[in-house]
Image 1: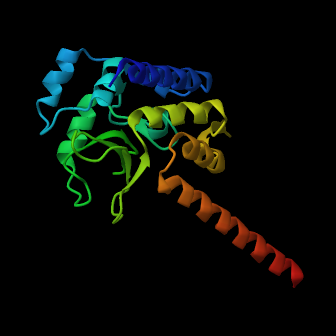
Image 2: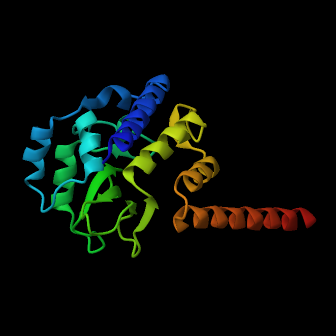
Image 3: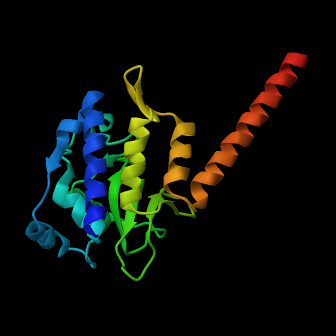
Length: 215
């Protein structure tokens, strides 16, 4: 990961943490200090691959979330629905992964606590992009072009009000989220398809409401 790429990731992380603090989300104070390169090397020795440069940048800046048994999942959330795994917890989640859909070079970065993850590939000769892993689904799709693009998208979602606190709950404005993701991850079919499906669903709902009013 080149120096400009490292700066982009770190800037995005810091912007997200500032927004979490502004929203008074507990995750802002539960994020841990970064690890030394030596410590990262010691931990990654348990893996069958080396961590990607983007992952090293992440964990040198912050070591994910200090999560312990009994914590309320929503308090851990770095963005709605998911929390940032510490490197130790991510390695343990990787070692426990038994899904046939999980590829052996994927490394979990964010988890929802129920078996779904955002995973980054670590094979330099393999695929790129961050995979939205949904347990039990036959297809696991790339949702972000890279970890850098994902963190930039998340930071923009906070800045533009796509992630917000409403009625005390951390939530998402799905349409804003999709539009930001499409702009910052050009060429990915996932978000464009999600947008088309949402528009079709909206049109069907409107047609149903008009039909009901006609009776």
